[in-house]
Image (cartoon, rainbow, N blue to C red; front, side, top):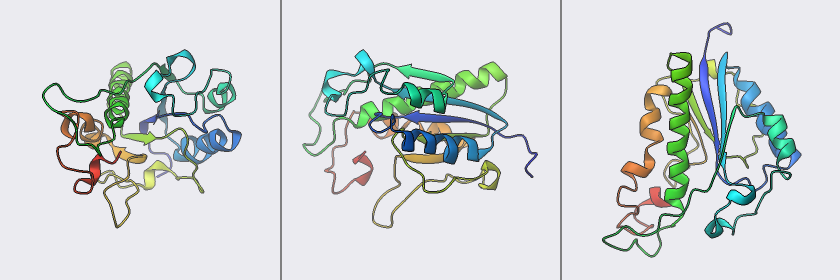
Length: 206
């Protein structure tokens, strides 16, 4: 039913990388934000650019406000959180496995910030949302995602290869699963890193 009221939050989180390229931000606007046809929507961008980019993350392409001005104008996020999310390092009592990517928990911290924005939006509208989306700012979608109403609200929708765990770059999440999805840093990295090597636990390959 195309007239059904459906609410959601789209959380665009991660390093900007190619976000400032017209092909990328126009695609994000058309194939994600507009195609979903939410009747109530809050779009959140969480990243680091300008002076907020942490030094340890500078291996990723640095972006200024000017670099992403057109992208911000087109995507038009309702909320922009621009501040550094630092690599946490080893826990106090032990070292992480040598193959553990030390940037994982910084990425997962951004997911916690996403969930905080979901709760703020819900408080402002005095009602829970129906869906939460997690999207990276540098993704390209070959076709529109489509009307959110076609997705089963009892299932979590995300890419997954037959050879690995669920992919962490994109997900369409029913609200009742959101707390679990966005708390990865707590249950996956409660000690900041896995004990087992990456070959045995693919979930740590963030």
